[in-house]
Length: 89
Image (cartoon, rainbow, N blue to C red; front, side):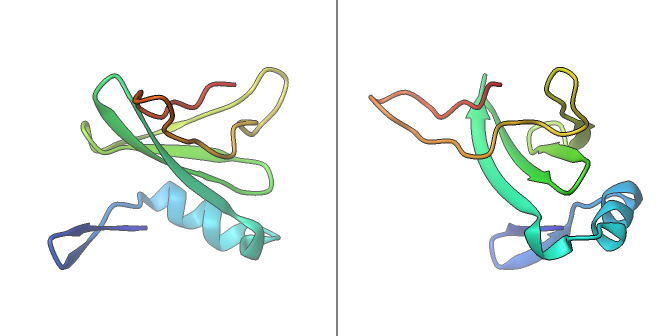
């Protein structure tokens, strides 16, 4: 995974995230989206049996899961009514 710093790509993926993407049986189906919450911008990617989120403010990756699942059910986020987007599920 990369992020842009002006026009310069910066690697943000950890070894774990790179391995999850490489080993995913359905890598072409990996879903990504972004959202903002509490002054933090997040990039979220979900594969076959994993979800990882990158916090742009702290530069830290973390796992996301919905109750009883290995993935996070959230898949999309929108900004509406003048409020920042937020993903919860």
